Length: 152
Image (cartoon, rainbow, N blue to C red; front, side):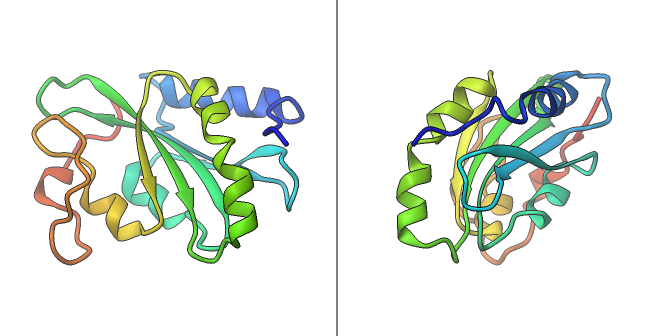
């Protein structure tokens, strides 16, 4: 069954617009499912950047995160879509939700996609030389280049 964005459409759209609006202090939004349904809703928004966002990821859920970061080389905003599948999500749900990534990607325009099952992986591989990277950098510590300005 397809992901349902219409049930909570206005709230989803509002969260998206707040993230993409450069003058908005909101720089991330987190989306997930209502219970075991395929209805997507806003799980949260925030102003604390990627570091704050990853703390909100739930190991028992499939979630979609959308975050605005500032490229330290160009100063331009970049958008990251994170497809989060928590370690505790059962295989049947993982399979069902795998087909929903494209629906979320079409809704959230202009992004670079990351797929993650580990907060450490997401934080440690965020940014290298103006390009997003998946390389790990040792223990789960933000790399020096993560001193990104999160909002304009």
